[in-house]
Image 1 (cartoon, rainbow, N blue to C red):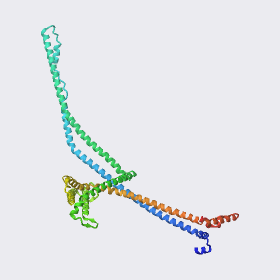
Image 2 (image 1 turned 180 degrees about the vertical axis):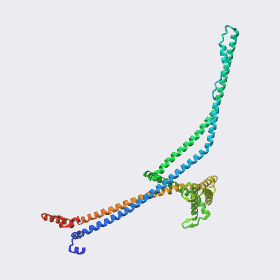
Image 3 (image 1 turned 45 degrees about the horizontal axis):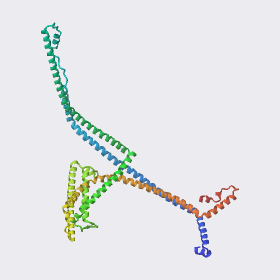
Image 4 (image 1 turned 60 degrees about the vertical axis):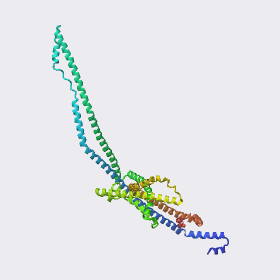
Length: 485
């Protein structure tokens, strides 16, 4: 029976809608058990599917974290080994230089000490010996003169001789003291030289001890990295993130320098290769300028690799010293030639600009527009200087580029792990939403057929009351009701 037929039987729309409502409720009531099972089964299927997807994403996240951990520890181990090797090399150079100077230092010290000992022996105080005739004088002095003038005169002469001898002894003692003081004064430069030599030894030993303490700290960090402790991972992760942003900032500055360099040489390159030639939608002159800049960057990379400042190309670092030195001079020569070419192109650009200005002035009928030509050499010199210096500046891009490449692995791993965790959370959340959506739909289904359910509950209550005396359980009347509820 269609709606039109019901409307013909029952012309009142409200009554027809009410009839349709009872019909639909009756149909839904009769199909409630399979409909609920279907809704719950579909929600469980979605929940299990999203849960399995979240589990697989979570396992991928664990594998990625393990890989990130290995990469981070490996990079930290390489950095620690590089620092330790550098400090050991410095200690080796310092010890080699100091040990090479120790024979000469020991010879200087022995010479100074020998000279000091000789001066010390010369400065030893030797008391003046008493005259041999002092005992004779003492015995004569004990002689009694008994008023004899001759004896008294002899005693006076003896006294005068003793006073004179005492004065001579004192003057001799003073002269000896002056000599000893002069000897001690000559010892002062030797003492200062010894002090200076010992100071050099002390400074060398202090430098070695300081480097040994640095090696101790580096070894402690190296042990932490080898153990794979959480502290080492946190330190390495924060260091990689900071290096990533710093190197990205430096690379952005280098890109700005490359843009300035491109501006300097693009215009004269158009005069050299033709400004009307195109490769696709790009001018040949612009492509040529970009190629020159990229060649300069490549030469800078090779130069840094040959100097063993960076380690982007292990093949270059593994060359023997003879070939490596040749490569250094070759790449530096190429850089010098390219810098000279860019300086010439910058000079050509200034000439072209002046010609354009003069031509436009002549076309406008202006003749006094060249008043500032006396100062044009300043602009020309500045552009030539920039054209010559920028290739060497771009050569140092290899250092932040290596840092950016090495740190980007860690940063990319951290970001990918965070994305996988977010995806796993979203999948688990979607699965739970699907599960509880099924339960919500079941409740809404019961809400739609509340009328038949209410009638069923009322009938069951009456049947319970009628069979209460027989002690029959309510579920025995309608076993499907409890399952539906």
